[in-house]
Amino acid sequence: MTDLIVRDQLGYRKTNEEFQGLVVNDKNLKIGNRIRLPEFDVVGNMWDLRGQYHIMVPMSKIEDISFFKSFYSDLETETICDIGDNREGCDSYLDKAYTYNTLKEKTRDMFRKYCNSGQKHKLVAKMDYDAIIIDKQYFYKVLKFMMDNSDKPMYYGNPFYRYYGGVSMGGNFYAINEKAIEHLCSCEMELSDVFAEDLWFGDVINNCTISKNLEGFDRINYIFNDGRKILHKNYNAKGVSLKLGRNINNDKF
Image (cartoon, rainbow, N blue to C red; front, side, top):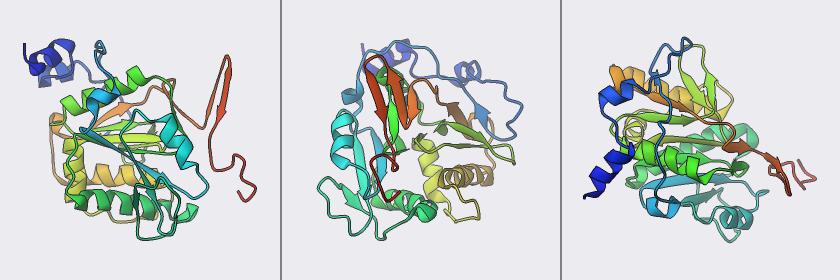
C-alpha cells in the first residue's frame, strides 16, 4: 500500500467535496473561507515531517537561544538574529538591527529573505520565542493537514477579524502552506500604517489573494488555533509554572 493511499485513508488529503464539509459558517468573513481541522488519527511525529516545513523564529538579544533550541529540539526551526548579535545559536542574520517599534519591517524582511532564498517547503511558519506548544499531536495534525493539502492556500493562527472582512493571525505562532507561500512571494510586501506586525502580515496575505480574483477554495482558507494547545507566554499546571517573554528577568524592559 502506497504512502499516498495510507494518507488518504487517514483523512489527511481532502477533495473539494470533502473540504466543503469542513467549512465553518462565519458571518464576519467577507473574503476567503474558514475551515475546521478535521479529525484523524496521528500515526507519526514531528521528526517524520522534517524537511517539509520551516519555522522562522525572530530572536532578540534579550531572548535565550539555548533554552529555545533545547525546548523545541524536535522542531525544524531557524533562529533569525539581528545583525551584530554574536551569540552562539543564531542560524541566520538579517541585515539590520530592529526595535520593538520596527517589528513590522523585521517581519517583512524575514519573509522577503525566505522568498528570495530559493527554498521550497510545504509550510512556512513564524513562531515567537514566547510561544508554548503544549500538544505536539495537535501541532502535528495542523502541519500535516496543511501540507498534504498544499494546493489550497491556508493560513493558520490566532484570529483577529479585520475591518474589510478578512482575518489576520496573532503573533505567537502562525503558518501558511505552499500555495499561500507562492501567492505571498509573488506580491509586493508593502508597509502600511498598521502598527502591529502580525496584523500587517495578515493584510498582506489577504490583499495578495484578493488581487488574484480567486474563487472557491482557491481563495485563502483560514484555520483558527485551538487556544488550549498552543499558548502565549504562560503555562500553569500541576507541577509546572512557565513564563516566557521579554519582560521576564529583564531589568531594562
